[in-house]
Image 1 (cartoon, protein in one colour):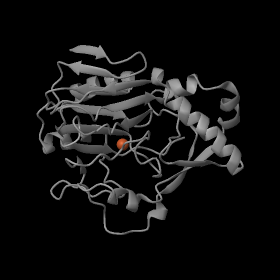
Image 2: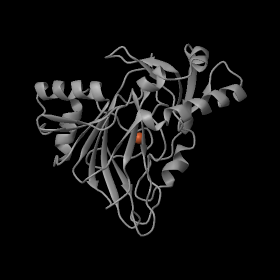
Image 3: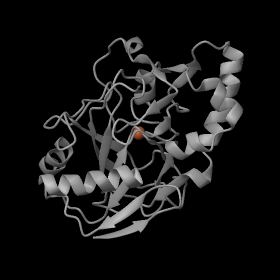
Length: 277
Ligand SMILES: [Fe+2]
């Protein structure tokens, strides 16, 4: 096995591991790497849908996405599609997946199917480091507080993407929940800064103005480049991230003459998480 660190903050590209191997030993090896590096990447992994599902099931029950429809044959696989002429793509801002759920995703396994010649890298940011390096005055203010995470407007949001489908119209209000701003990782015991630009709307117990001001500072802090790593996709690459301890950002840098005019297709499987505490 060879491990190439992607930045000083988080992320590693792993070679010498076969993701078709769904044995307990292989799971333990991968999970240790995941906990240590928070996001891990594997290239040239020509795994089938069934193999991707078998791999993911090692981490627990799989999740069906709250508002995006999965594949007909495998509803637990969400196909993320950016059509040729689209400039935008799903996930193009800092977020952690489905933090508006009671039990947000534990981990995600994302496999690339089609990748443009340039553009569409994914960035990750380390939220343990973000907590450690956060301004002490802000830390003191938020350390015992909760925040509201909401997916309101999701139905319009998914309508933005031509290649993707939402579930039938349902009440999107239900995807709004409160979580502690600082959560504890259930496996490592580390503190994690658990808010994000896309879904966190308000700090409970503060006036809106003060909440907005503090959240703005936190979101800027979380996006500091020295907390991040960046992955340049190739086809048949697999990324796996610990959705409890990182934020991610799918960069939509598809401009004419460069990344625009090409499809980008990824297959995503999410594993159920627990309630943040
Ligand atoms: Fe995402």
